[in-house]
Length: 479
Ligand code: BYC
Ligand code: FE
Ligand code: FE
Image (cartoon, rainbow, N blue to C red; front, side, top):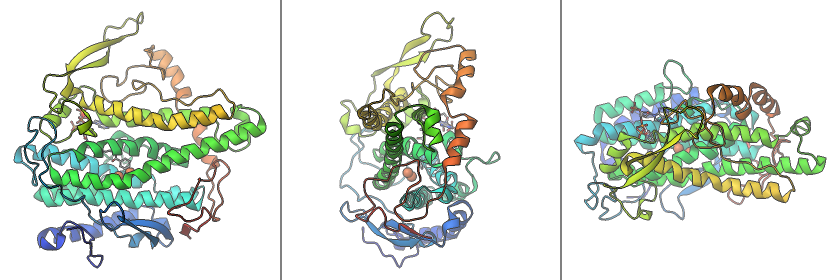
């Protein structure tokens, strides 16, 4: 089952050769994918050899191969985690029944919507990051960017496989449309908000990979629990690759903090102006980027009170990450205390009410809360570094109600610390809470390409180590 034949046009461990119709349909989609990569991916670097890992199987010990590859020659394959014998549904109304190998008719459109929404984010992110190679702060970073890009391309393949294999003609049409929508296109945009935001600089890339790829982790973990076994197995393998994407964000932000602290100690000041004069990223600026990307990513979990989420849980389509850690997997009678805005707020009290909703309806909020806890881990490390360097500043996650566009708090004026404030106070202060035009222009001005092996742009510290036991000054991209 899991032996991969790389002479196949589409490397896979899903026995594609045994289903000629499916294989032909995917081979028909393949040149369209390559066209899309050519038009919307990092194709300015097509000629470069890049030190990439390629998925070659699903065995935890040896799932990837490392080597110099030109990106258009990357082998985008279709992989699923091995099938678990006698796997049963782990949550919801059908708990304990055998999982499904095909899609039950009554859940077809919901599952298709989930898979299309998941699939849509993958090429969207490649489009958003398309030009960053030109301003990479080092060859090491450039390689990481391209690694992420090819793997998001593979994640698209993973979803397109499910659409082709299980959703017939509708699925094939959806697979075409995944290549037709474009990030930020006013006429045909990507489905979810964050995936239409521009990523024009590397600070945004690190924020995106820290906060938005982490949404990916939580959504994939929710689908890993699914009763639809092919979706579960596909997502379990995608999570193997996802870890590196978050690593890039986590270490990227950490290296900026490190470099800025070095400078602050050297100049004996935390004055943002002084930091900027020396060409680095001041911590308040970093905080504003955090405020922007965290709040945008929070919207990706959907509404706090969602009948979609309740139905998906009841029907076993989408569970909670690490469902086995919960005591109750059915949650039929359970209640969730949800904070909602008081519609009659006069400005005199907190303006936040607690409403009891069925736990199943609050699944999005439950998953969002686990996500927030996961986001906090990096902050503990960065703040320890700031404290050790002798400065009082602390990086924080803003309130989950701040600057929301989806759900109960959408459009409600809330400060980053979570207080309800007047619309006027919100409008006046928002430019200080998220990056201003000036901030963005400043960050852009720092973005210079550094193409010498081992060298880093001035605003970022080198990584602690290289990739796969290579030295930091290894030539990760041969331009
Ligand atoms: N922007 O009941 P509601 C990743 C829509 S990241 C725009 O509130 P539900 C990656 C929603 O679609 C992971 N629209 O929410 C990261 C629905 O529309 P329809 C991506 C939004 O349905 C980095 C309506 O509002 N994977 O992999 O419970 C790089 C009401 O829905 C937004 C997934 O998201 C938004 N932010 O849940 C590369 C998993 N939020 O259907 C890759 C698949 C909600 O009424 N998606 N809406 O027209 C899902 O599971 C669910 O669709 C959502 C929403 C969690 C997104
Ligand atoms: Fe992905
Ligand atoms: Fe990712």
